[in-house]
Length: 335
Image (cartoon, rainbow, N blue to C red; front, top):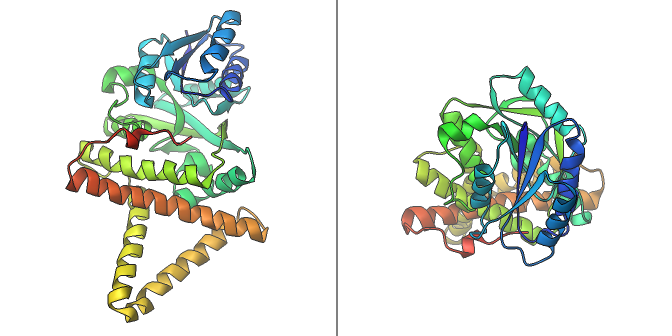
């Protein structure tokens, strides 16, 4: 078996068939297995997967009673037999040449322990298009190269990575304590153990972007919140870019409080906010020339930065000051 594709899912009746079929179409010349790990879906997800299994024995279905992503990933890994193991989101569709290109990248870069590509945004509506454009901007997401597509080469993380089996044998599997950021944490452990992650910008997976500003806020709030938990576990800051939204929110809050006490302090803080607005609008013009879209993309930048930074701030309070553990509420899905 060349490749095992692990797909964690819950209530994905809208996307799961497209996802699985895209994998099967890309695997014509390869020995693969598709391992769907379902988190107790209450919609038609299980029925859809079961029907696909009847016509293709490469598709397998397992149950994830814990319902969180790291448990699903580990169940898939434990039941896989492939030399390579790919993690794929249920909201994704694989390009037809993805697997052949993927294996070619591994052959050309034998020192790579993990290979991934770019996220090619697919839009459900106008809001998701705006969100997708903001998330493909370096101003919006920093040096997350799998979103911005700025380079091929060795990076610190990828989305939907494909790992050599030896990686899991050497450093273990995904941390089940992490309902979010489990892939970033795993990739951090890889790099700490001198393993390399390669991004090829000619590889791409279609990804259905969230179609709601509210859901985007919740998503990035959780990313920031859980990042603190990862830092606490490792007693280290895993990436410098994670601190920038936190510093942004901290400056906003400190400036607001100071302005109440010392109104004249606004003379120092207003230039910062003005600079942020200018950079935001300028970055938005690289994604659209329409005035309404420029404004909405800039608004999305603010959501990305503030929600992540606020989540990170609350994570510091929750984990480092109150010494609490994540609650069920912190694990709720944002889809």
